[in-house]
Image 1 (spheres, rainbow, N blue to C red):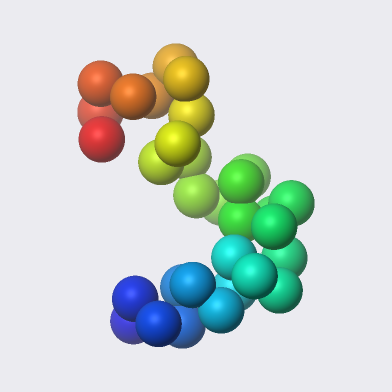
Image 2 (spheres, rainbow, N blue to C red; image 1 turned 90 degrees about the vertical axis):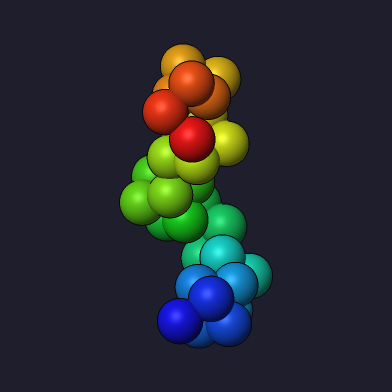
Amino acid sequence: MVRDHLVSVRGRPRESVRTVPFWTPGKRGLH
């Protein structure tokens, strides 16, 4: 699962940022 996720981030960096709100400045407390 983690490996597939990394591949997706490399293939679609723009979509990843939208689908992966992990490194967002406003959602840093939720992480």
